[in-house]
Length: 310
Length: 246
Image (cartoon, rainbow over all chains, first blue to last red; front, side, top):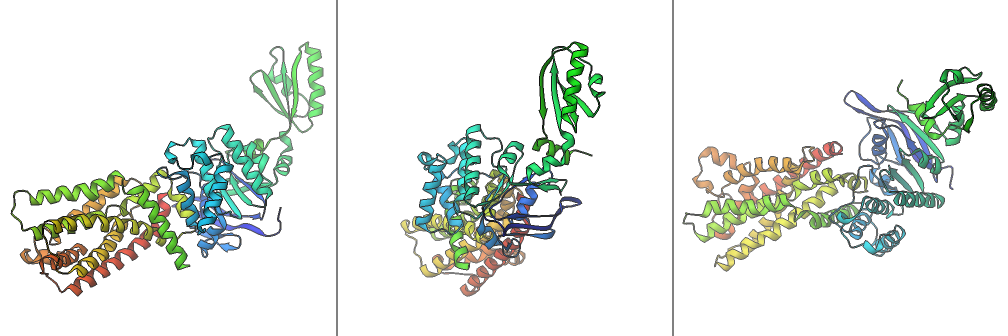
């Protein structure tokens, strides 16, 4: 992984739509070779941020750059550096997969031989080569998304900006796209990846930023973020008969208790202490513990904590 | 930089040709509508063949060259291909030029049909060079006019076609196609000056009938002026409105 140089820089980036501030003076940097996750609930400002970075919309304040090129002032150079998969985009359904790739290659200024070789390699890599001359209107959603990934990759960009690349896809297509992302990142390609899938962000991203209501509310490595919310350590327990929730919330060190079906989740800073108490409780009340597990905070917990409605 | 953007315009034009020539709004408003309008004008009237062909050619070029370019951007906005296109390293003026080239080619190629039809019926073209130059310049002018029609940031192609027809039909009636400029009232002749179609019609009459209302250099200058005006306006407004289509 290359380090040191920033592939993407965002400084004081702001976008307003009327009185609504969609993106509010945000700053972050993505190092070359990094796989940077950009998370946030719907309407938090992810797509608006991505659109400003890709030069599709102009910011009201601040600036973004890709590989040192200012997106607003050196738009074409900045765009030339990046492959983009917009969230709501489609391939041209009246064109074949091959024609779609040739179009994108020409828009990136690739020579004929180069675009043909790359298109062939990419289509083989995503398993669409046999269907290269079929109009995209006959493709499933997963096939279309695989093609769109190829369209983003056709110029062999140093930076890839993918907005929800696996959203709504079948398991096979999602896994294929995730494996392509991981492989390319290992080869040194920088990624800015927005996703709703916390497991995907957890598996792939070396660093993540969480945006909420237009502001960056957290930015760090996933494990560091999880450590920051240690209060979310919990013990999950189930018994062979009903017990009162109030009995469990009275345990020393338990911050709160949630009932989830036949299970209880007890949040505490010291899970070990809670387990001793649970065992004592089960003996004294003559109930049997059916299952018992300690649960560390997940990225989803981090996400919920930082984006919960106040 | 200019050369590379021009090549990307050609890629956009190639894509447009593959996708949009057979779209319903293009076929309906570019070919069927002017044909029926022409038949309505023709039926029951005794019109010399030269006048008939001049009229048909003017209408054909005007309707075909303004049929493709207004459809493209709203269509791309509605089907979700626009954001990918404008995320690529191609400028908005280059995208517009690509759309204009597709429209231009459509207009020029379809215009060959009434010319061939006229020649088969024995119509003589007095000035082929003037006719060819007039067709090429006007196709370019009308194609940019078409992109100007699509500047309102709606992604419903039928809305754009409605807006474009709101302008196109009055232009057909005030541009000397059905009624020669000399037979128009003074206010009609004054309004006709503001229609680019007037100057194409005049040049076609000159080429086929040997008569014209204005000096042909003035006709050419007016078409070039309208082209520049439409091009600049289309670029400025599209650059401002493009994000609203997303």
